[in-house]
Image (cartoon, chains in turn green, yellow):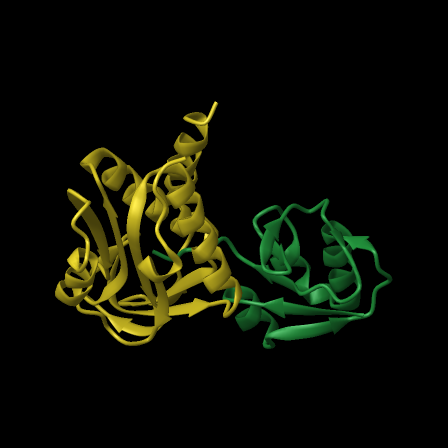
Length: 82
Length: 162
């Protein structure tokens, strides 16, 4: 199981700041997004496309990055600080 | 190997409270006789953004990753330029028009390094640090959209590495 954190628009649209996803690890970020959509079809619009970013263990990663058991995973829109 | 700041000379803070630029500048000058240049940037809440009147701004962040990413950005800057002091403050929570959002100050022997390092830190912060702005506008609340120009600003630093 992977504990996935959400920030900004995702947290707001999904109405929750995290989700416990049943998925076999290791898996890629792309597979994790697909599994989230499979379990929550109404999240498809927010999670599809390239704009959603992923951080694993607090570092930004690409969709091909492999997630292992115990990793901290977060999904969020492009950052807008500064 | 150029001069690098000691850990005590790097100050990175993420806070809801406002900050005092005069105090931060004083801290940059304190016990700093080798440097001839301090450059600082402060970012403010603007009343017009992306076509709407802004009345307030909420800043969300990713606790933990925020601090890590700011540390990494400052580390990259100190590896690239001879800096002796760096101060970086980013506010979170509810802000209003004209409030200060961010402060970056760097100190170096000469101005070129100081100007470039300050610019570099801001460009990387805009694209890499996990902050998100939600504006209150005359047309309702909305999340600020990321801009392509910020990516272009970031890309120019990597071209120089080639």
